[in-house]
Image 1 (tube, rainbow, N blue to C red):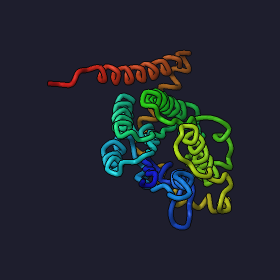
Image 2: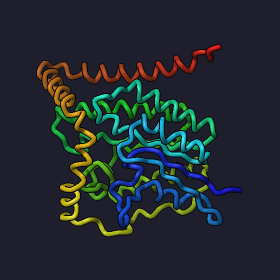
Image 3: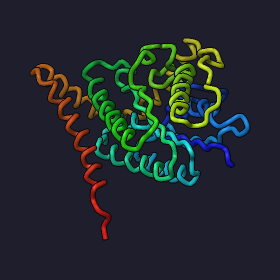
Image 4: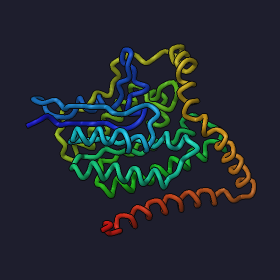
Length: 285
């Protein structure tokens, strides 16, 4: 009998950004992998996540590679980078995730998913700039919730809770967990998998293996790498985000801010309804 096989898909969060070990990133996924399998047969782990990935990258690049590995457990944690691009389209995000989830469930893999906090609040952007990003992330989370239920995924609610406001959980850039935060994600996924009956070993330790980076080290990382990381993902969004912020200000002045939320809710409902209609369509002759 072969060892349990775990494959991780996603972006920088799953790549491990924020949890540096030597010259590489580690993160929650390999920490979780260390707690899967059995004493006699450790889990086989492959991390296909790539920093900057969007749902299109997961669908077109990572999923075919992962399907070839025939995983027993597969994690798909993605969507934040989609919200940081001017091309954001919740219909496209929903359709891609639907295809990805369906492909792995067709192989009878246990599917791990998660909803995530919105980047605007994590970066502490001003309200008019933060609200459009929050609205986008809520839309993605709503889709992930709905599709996770549809496909029977093991779903982690990580979009809120005490860990969001606990500074000790986060790295210098405030977008990625530090080692302690990655360990919490690994432990929470481990507990959910155990509840689902997946063979698990000891849960990952909650205590960091390495000292937390000093304030000067964090500032240096932000100045040399972190700021560039954020800029590369937001450059094409900035002009649109300023336009969205202006709309926020106008609606607030008119007392019609609820219209923006309602429009976003309608878009999510339409995206999910489109998937339901597609599922009901008979195969073409």
